[in-house]
Image: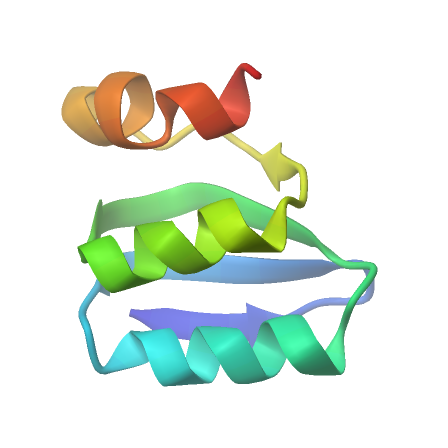
Length: 79
């Protein structure tokens, strides 16, 4: 996975592994007002999902993977 910082968002791309959780946490701490763009996210390790949940921030975009979109991130995207 790649964590990219945009002007007003944190962009997650590819497959988010457990190793990516630390990079995501740093991005969340460094940019407390950024929304999180998951439109290019393919898979997410539970550690990454837990960070997204704990951050309590709006998610932007819609992942292409049905399971990720509807089950894993479904509750975060549609509170």
